[in-house]
Image 1: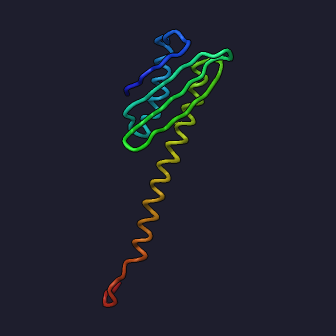
Image 2: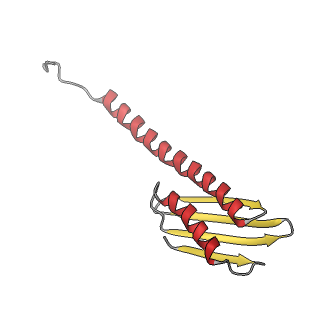
Length: 115
């Protein structure tokens, strides 16, 4: 997975934090193939603010969260991204099924056919 990190008012992340982010986003990659990943990390007076953007062929998934630590934020972002991906795949599947049903209704069976 190709992850691009962008920092604002933060020193670059340590290896442990990067490994944690990659592990959490890696579990999302099991659901759908991801081409690019963009992680923006900003430190504010109240803690951290994270934005994550995943993109593949036809979809872009975004989530953002603020919290006291980067790990806390990435946990919540992971759940939000999984929910978005699940909703998107279910919607595509339902539309295919609905189209198949309408085609089935419109087909005419020959009167001479025996079943």
